[in-house]
Amino acid sequence: MKQVGFWFFVLLVVLSIAWYIRVNGVPSFNSIIKPSATTSKTQSLSIADKTIVTIEIADTDEKRALGLSFRKSLPEKNGMLFIFETPGTYSFWMKDMNFPLDMIWIGEDNTIVDITENVPNPDLSAPLYDLPHYSPKVPAKMILEVNAGFSKKNVISLGDRVEIN
Image (cartoon, rainbow, N blue to C red; front, top):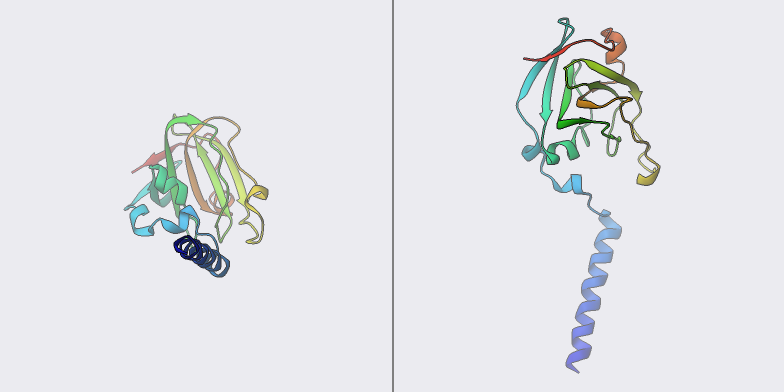
């Protein structure tokens, strides 16, 4: 009789978890992270001594994983700078993004080595395995994400020098 009670309890727990997931969905890694734990103070960055961008720095795995996900928008001339220890052809995707971006890839010498313009935010119903990944053509050490159209509007070009102020 005790075994029946135990298995009934286990079944009840499993059904409760299944109901919770059905109602609320499976929590993603990014939704578990508290935004206050991942945001940082802002700094400014200049491109070719002409364009000033207010940036947040993403220099830890936690901050890079969250990125700009879940935000509704990004103020004009603002962005997020992803900094890595070594240059590489890092792959980015637009999971949980609500607006399109330009990705400006910055090499070890602080010059722009590639630009990926107008990266669309995904259809929310698209499965994760269908989301495209974006990488630079050559290794980059930093990636600046800004609103789509920023690169054209501010005449950002390959070879432009980037300075973090």
